[in-house]
Length: 198
Image 1: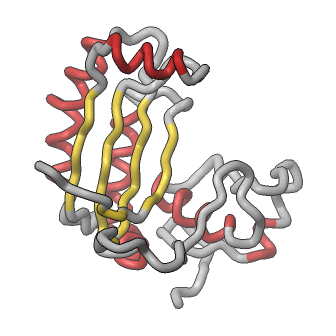
Image 2: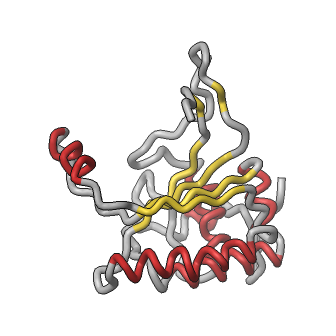
């Protein structure tokens, strides 16, 4: 296990003493860091979150025995549920995301040990709107979903603990500020293939 340390360099761990310096953090919330590399903050917060129960979604590693035909997928995936800023048109959002941001991700993907990257862009769909309304759900606030695969959570943490990985993560996070709103969400998932009829 890597040791936590102070200074400007990346570190995936946060000491418990540092947790107590954030008295405003409510139970179930990861502390927010005003300074430091964005991806370093994500790794630190994820480590710190293990000390408290989740606030909303409950994450578990062991789902029990999979039903017959269900195939656990290798690796780990982070999904970014993306909300555009209010002052940006949907057309400009989608254009920037695929034409400007995706080449940046490609160019830095090896530094971050990424294995796969998919952008899913929202398309106009009366059927999707009607399906949400029929369930009594709120309108969709997201413009799309980005999916990024790693071999494991440990591989991801190790990559972002290197100077190149930390710099790459910082570059992506800085670019995200140009087209993403802070209402966007990040979740980490494991995949289970139920069926594939393609």
